[in-house]
Length: 187
Image 1 (cartoon, rainbow, N blue to C red):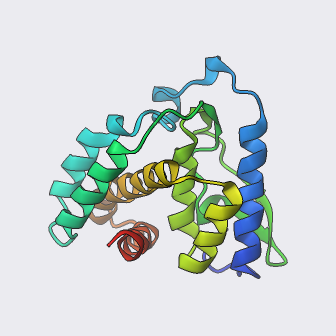
Image 2 (tube, rainbow, N blue to C red; image 1 turned 90 degrees about the vertical axis):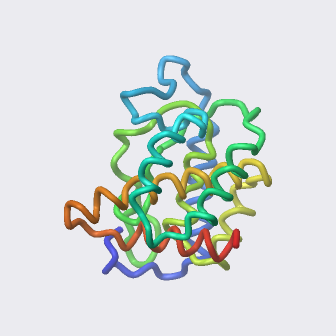
Image 3 (cartoon, rainbow, N blue to C red; image 1 turned 60 degrees about the vertical axis):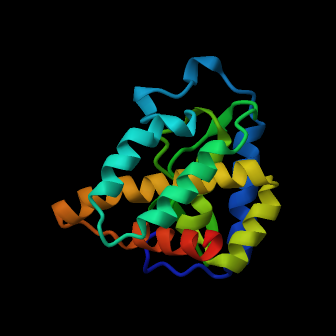
């Protein structure tokens, strides 16, 4: 979904994306598609992102590092005993197709794999402000531990991307918005 494409009803989209993820998760996982270099570690244990997260955070002096470090530690402590599931790994506004204000497709499956489904919860902060995000959480059935790991995925994705975006002159608004939404929710 490009930013100019209007989402008709963000609450309806929250339900539709939760149903999409529910379907993806319902397919029996294939161990041959576990996380790894091929899918940039999507679905791997969150701790595998600690080194690049900390390196990127050190390059962002304007970011509230106390908040980011606290949320990161909390996400790392969240129980990771969930069974591996299929995941898309990269659902954000640029990979969501909308027609007539409704979800019509999800593209860019290059990072899909099998692992911790909390990875796909980064969508909550990439796509939604708090009220529809809460609808998304209820509709997908995310418990506290999975939700917290999803927040860790969202935080790490945004923090790791920002230094690269700033250095390369790329758009950074989605990552900045994700961090603002995380700060609103977990402050």
